Length: 154
Image (cartoon, rainbow, N blue to C red; front, top):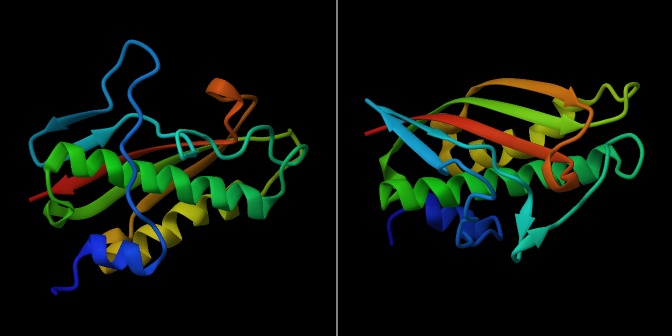
């Protein structure tokens, strides 16, 4: 069997879920030229948020990293629906990571590594990306992390 993105994900213990449907008036992804832009993905696992609350109050950095990882899993699930095959992903161009956190929490960049690490492990060099990680007062549904992606596709 060829070394594919989905095979690498399975080796990492990740099976892509059925992606979440939009919770409001938007679409889960939009293509423009060779770019595919995802809407923000929450840390949904087994059909529900796998964590809730603010980093620095209800959750620590490690829990935030795990939440960010599941946001990345959900980005990949949306990409699979959009493209039909993850092998069409040429590069993850940029992630924007929103971290619901207390005003004194300053490890947003470390939380974001949960997503970045998974994408690099699954896609190799194609998973390396530019990134912003910003603190927010709150996120939809009391999610601790939300991530959107810009992806170059073949």
